[in-house]
Image (cartoon, rainbow, N blue to C red):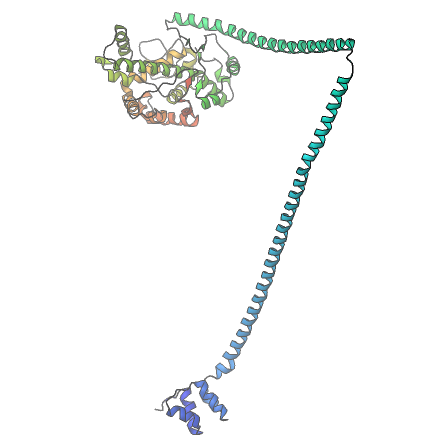
Length: 491
């Protein structure tokens, strides 16, 4: 079988046939010539290479022309890119030149402005000198003229009289203005005194009511001179209440910001509170009525805690202090005289929880129990005076406890949470927060109040929802106006 020769071998064989010495010498010297070199030598010796074994025919006729065209395209691209880059450089140079010229213009303008300003400033001393010389010469000539003239006694007397007349007129006008201002202030004071006189009889009526129900009088602080405004049981209308709030500038946004509430104590809700169309206004009115009552009871509890800590820190106690302790043991239903248990029970109810429960149990102050019996928290009773529920199971014989005034309901509610065995977890969690010097927050304690209503966990979720939706957490640090902030440290 004949061996297939490569294209190079065929070229060498062709050189042997035509006796091309140059190629033979290269082969003898074992120098490898490339295909291109062999073709070049053969063409130089005018030897035609047959097409039948010229395998690079496709390359010569197709590949090379295509590559040539592609090179031309590449050259065209390169030229166009060079022209584009040249054009872009020209644009950049133009921008730089324009920016330099603009900055040069600004700097020149700034320098010219500065030179003008310096020129103007340099003129000031000259102008001042001119004015100074003019005024000096004028005054000098004036005084010289006065000195040189002879004084006329008649004219001098008239001048003196005119001077004193002018001074007298000015004095009369000034005293008249002062008198007018004092008169306005006196009128304002009289209006304030009139308002106080109108309020004082109401307070007296309330004191009579409190004596009839055998409630202790509410004492005002002598040092601060802040009168507690107690509104009696006079069937107040809602519009009257709203007007009163406006007169005393009682605003919840201000309370939220300043954390201070005025000591205004209502003995009952307005009977027409439910007629307010705006839900927001109804809720705000309810909070304004109940908030001072809750804060006042909490501050009373804090006063008792401070007194208890003072007594327990002493080695010896007086008979009066021992009697006070006995009363507190009875009030908080503490057996065996345990001081620790008394401390555990004698503590505040977070304002947010009290407001949320009052809103839930009284329908924001519009329920029959709240309007007829001042029962804000819906506490049950089996042997006391109460209001019969209209819809209740026949197997149950409870009533809703009735109270003479709203504050009595708040006090009973706090005593209930602080003493009843159903709220042990509530008191334990509150005590843990105290021991860790943490703030007593309502949202943390709501989970422990499942025993307050038959709904259980659903009831606690509702309380948390009321607190969050109405931003009742804002009222937890609120104090009565001019009261002292009470802090307790665990040593």
